[in-house]
Amino acid sequence: MMRSTDVLEQLDAAAEEFLFPDLNNGYYYAIDVRLHAYHDASRWALVIEAVGYSPRARSLTDVLHVYGNCLTRGEPGYDDGDFLDRVDNWDDVESDVPEIYRGGPIVVRGQAISVAAEPGEKLVDVFRRLARNHRELLLANDVELRRRIPIDLPEVLRLDQWHHPILTDGVRPSESETFQQIADVLTTGDVGRYAPSQPPNTHWSNWPESGSL
Image (cartoon, rainbow, N blue to C red; front, top):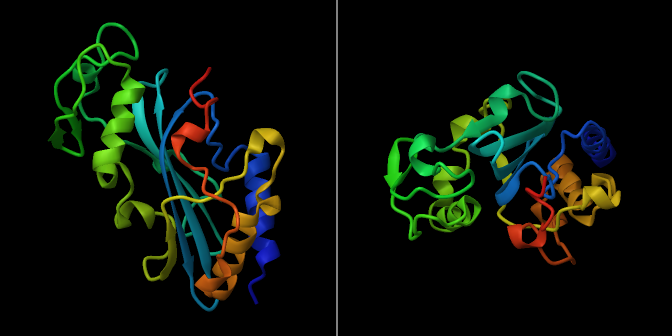
């Protein structure tokens, strides 16, 4: 029998090890998010995507945070294969001045994208504009999502926004209404268990400390 408490304990343990999404991460500018919940009679899995721009790593990366009782490889949280770098032509995109847009197309997964941006703009602003119009290219496809979870496990819930706990304020996932309800969905398959009373806060504008280091 699957229990919501087991889900929340796994998420809390991940947060203790800094393996749960912190949208105020000082090393990544918050760009975009998505959440996927999977369930069947005996298995559950949760994948949380956090797209961020790291000036130090010179990357625009979708980090997959993977949890569940049926992982096909690795441990809850993320491993090296869960960092999905999206920009193919970084040296053409960043100017000689760090964090500044050089101009021209941005190549994502082999596709050249023209962004309504001028040379000299801050890269973080350009990437946020890119995500607004081309987010599906930045977020994971099904093959990427299922690298560490069973390919036959049904997806029962997908969220593009939700109320995320502020880890830096000491709020654990188990204390979050969002993840309490998602844990119920994961263990019962009843999507109606997700009925949030709090407004979404996952838009990047709600995380001013992201990228501040």
